[in-house]
Length: 87
Image 1 (tube, rainbow, N blue to C red):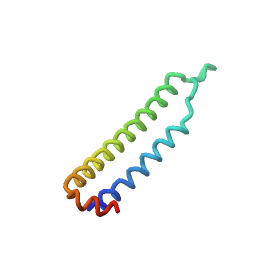
Image 2 (image 1 turned 90 degrees about the vertical axis):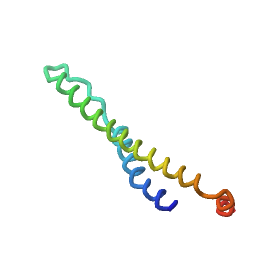
Image 3 (image 1 turned 90 degrees about the horizontal axis):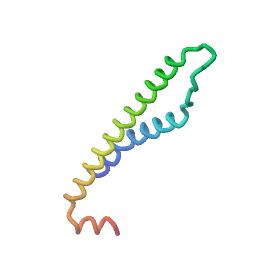
Image 4 (image 1 turned 120 degrees about the vertical axis):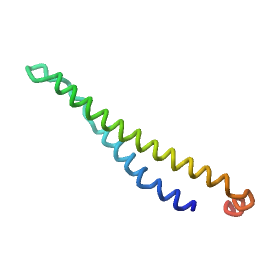
């Protein structure tokens, strides 16, 4: 059971790491003041950032649920068994 809970977190940790790396690589676009469409550029950048934020929030929520399951599991394991596993 404990291995299954830990393994279930791996894909989500990978997705979260990927999303955070994508956010790091985003370049803030300075609106082109030479006659481009600065409002549209800003709106597009805002849309991309909100999308990435939602993905990260969803992944964090999933990891929190996995963590709760892990804590529940640990509470059900008798103390004597936990001590044996720690040795």
